[in-house]
Length: 511
Image (cartoon, rainbow, N blue to C red; front, side, top):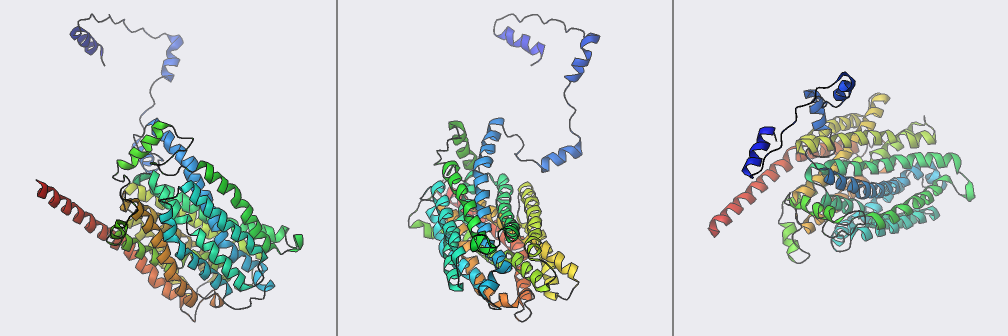
């Protein structure tokens, strides 16, 4: 307020405004100090543009809310990342063990034992995913998620005792059954806390942790092969399962004490009352206030919605690209060349994870910034299409084949993009959102079982020439690109317009 405004306000209040002293003339002694206190120049347009794109909080976020988000990132996001890291560590360890002496020691030969281990794991996943994510709406996440992590880690530990393929199949089914709670459950809880403009970046970091788990599994097996072979009378590949279990124990304990549950049920010790209330308001301001309940209406709310079909189709097309198995096929390719040592065979495929890491973070930032997932999916799908064309042709220079295997790491960004998209599209219906995230995982896992067994049998790796594996996967890559780039956006736009018209008709009927 300026001095004249102060005098006018004081006059209206019947008071005499104090006489303003003349500003002191700065002396030479303090002129440097005054120069230091001058406001910083405004950022240049280019610098402001960069800040608008690469920011962690939305512009205008208060210091108090930034502190709330920091706590969520520190506790909720960190546990989510650690849990997913363990999940992918445990998912990928069989491949690394298989390539590091397990097949030879147990006499698996040229059969499809590795494919069947993947299949039984996937069957466990599809049986458990939908039910696990409905359970999480009843049992608090800080109990349910660490419980599932503990149980599947115990089954992972038992793998070190296996002597036959059927023993692996049984344990892999049990591991998949309880691991099915991880991805949809964590994705659901992230959607409970973060805004739409924050969700893709956090989902990307969460899924990136799984990529790091894949990479670490290779590094760990390579280190164990060099340092633990023969220790305790066991092969190094058996030690891998023991170390995986040891790493999981502190993560489960951390989750019990630090997972915040949901904004409307939280009792987290690190959140004060204002932060708990603000967390609820943040979600409600976006029209995602929890609605609905676990009753018979949930069936109608789910299966008459567009979301359950749109995202289930998308996730199924994604699994049918066999992108999640590319690191495994790359490992088998390196082994088939007979040019690389076992540590190299375990380490080189981790470069796929590095590509995955970069692409996930980049696509998460871009999709949050533009507020749309479709264009990002379209761009990544175009790159993935090129990679699969090269793998389908196959008769290309070794360097190009290596490059496209590594660039296939871009496939992973579809997971956080679809998860964030489904989270925001389902709004506040907690049961529908939970079921959609679990159901899309189950169906995606179900459809890939026969496809992976027939088209990508491990006995035909890495070219899959007789089964035309890469060519058939290319068809699904193209379908995925078109469906996520054009199909879902158009369906969502039509559905939202229809809801708006129905609401207007209902309002006119009341009038």
